[in-house]
Image 1 (tube, rainbow, N blue to C red):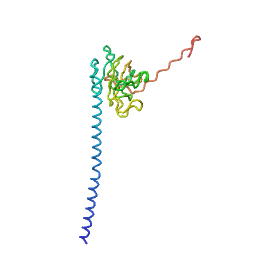
Image 2: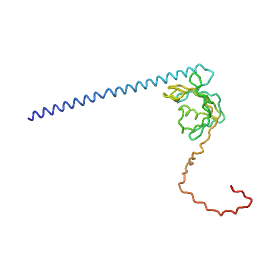
Image 3: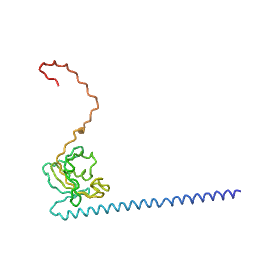
Image 4: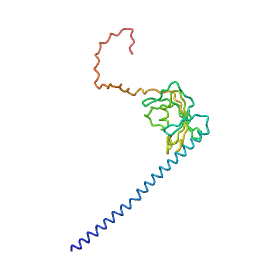
Length: 218
């Protein structure tokens, strides 16, 4: 009888072991497929970026009289009009006022200045094109700069859902008319100072002055 029980237990253990092994083997291809998909996606994006950069570099090579500047963020620019006297630049918390023209990489206008109208941008507080978000902070007042943005610095794989398509490189010409501090922003306390949290004392009311006959009250 004991031998029969041991045989039954051994059989059940073997069935359970085989079931667990099959379950693990069945799940393994899912992980492998996921890893393969991610690798292919990364390789495809790298190839896309390289192709877009090759196109931009060809444009630069074909315009030797124009001085282009490469940036650390992976886009290029040149100055149409440069301000070398006032070197202040917009920073977080400022409001920038600018005009914008957007072209495709072949130079065909997508959005003209008239289409877009005057632009107002709260620096680093609004969701705008990544390239413009970075580029505007490099500009000075009354400068006009043309930026060459690969798609990952423009509208990426989804476009703008209007005239700009997926993975589209752009040429953007920006004129920074002015920038000012945001009047709604509270100034930070000076170094070594803390903002007081005590409630202000109520002002002592003054007796009302007698109204003169020739006084006009609003």
